[in-house]
Length: 471
Image (cartoon, one colour):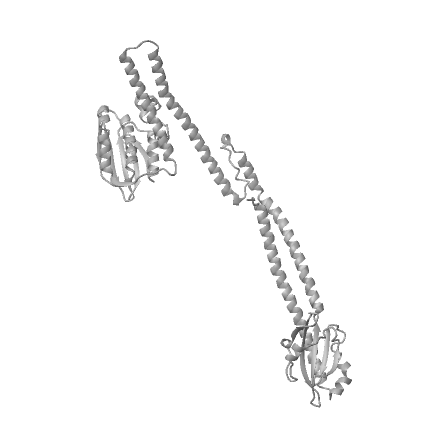
């Protein structure tokens, strides 16, 4: 399919509009001129008919009409397009002047059909039109005059419209020529003007062509762009900023993933190399295998989390929504973590009730990640609270644990992948349970449910709040 040029399309549109305007104006002028010419000619025919009838009514008989023919024909004398014919009551011709150019077998039949009586007033509306043998239009009228002896005669005044016809033909041809020339001129000027007007757009395209993966932070200049293109330039710059941020996060994510996977792999390799450096006892080999198994489980959990996040970002990721009691679900989660809590010397308390609609498996995973995170940073002998509260618009699930406050500037960043507020815990043995992905998974799950996840922290402890829209 051929690519359509915007410049040519706009130029053709302007040229077409110009041609339409020329056609409308030209047609109006043409028909106005035609009507005005006919009106003027009709007025001449009417005046000549009135004068001729008045002169004829001063004559005594048909013989006087023949004798004073020059007096009557003087009304049309000197005008090659005007003709006159005078007929007696029987239709015999008494006078004729210049009828050869318009004569045919049916001369003045239309006029005779509307012949006016001698007492009727002659007006422009009485003029009729017919065509001669050559197809040329002829306009005229027929009127009766009563001689002084009472004899009626018929006077026919006609005008050959050949000159007017040719005049209008030449005028119409000039309209065609001028209209076509005007359209070409409008197309050329429109093409030049549109091309010049689109120059800022071409400059923006050239500027955008210089943007590469390494130069995503190169903005498109907005100051020089016309006001109509500034919104486009701003949108492009915003898109580049999003792409730049996405590539930065992807690069950081890749680096963090490689670093976190290198740690357990390094542990596996180091422990194995040490064990193979000399002969070991059976107990030492068993301890090595147990350590390697823990590192393998750590890698497995990390890979599973990464796969989950990748799938959750796919538009076709499926969730199975169901209505359930959030309080009962929290109690079940607390029972599941009871053994870990006892080992850590921490008590888990569940309070509140409320019904919500969510994917129960994903809900348990989100709350489980928050609870595992709370167990990791709660001191022995303290208590973690799982609570549910309902408002008019939403259901909130909160996981609270005592501990040192998190800097307010970091409360949003802790939901980023592989981000840890406390770098010293990066290589803790139990850190592999999350690998910096637990909170990222929580936020992803809430996004899938159309809800939100946020954190609050102060001197009393830290609270993670999951907000679900009400049913």
